[in-house]
Length: 166
Image (cartoon, rainbow, N blue to C red):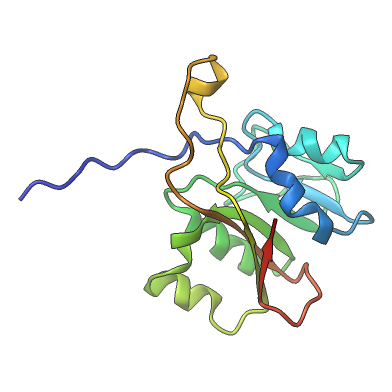
């Protein structure tokens, strides 16, 4: 049996416009750690919107933390293995906001990690068209083949666990 080749979706950077879906829920008086800094697109947009952000390309966020004070971990982790990031965030015990694929909420590992946690999920109305190496080179690319969500923990004060946003 032949299975289709899966794409490697690890080099998909957050476009600045994606932040409009989560910033209404983000307190301005906190310091955000952008842990998967990449090219700095997410951090740059948050700074443009007057958020205090720390982040470093050279830090292994699965092992280390920044030396600077931070309150909330925010990132778009590599899609392959993002459960490692969720596990690490829960171990740290601090609030987090992760931009992940919707289908990553399913499965045994996600259930074990998130069951009983005070998570809130922000679901954008439209798919997020990530920045890719091709799009950054100016090449034409199609839209995102999947839906994304913001998985949050101890950030959003709401009775609703799932929040749909336009």
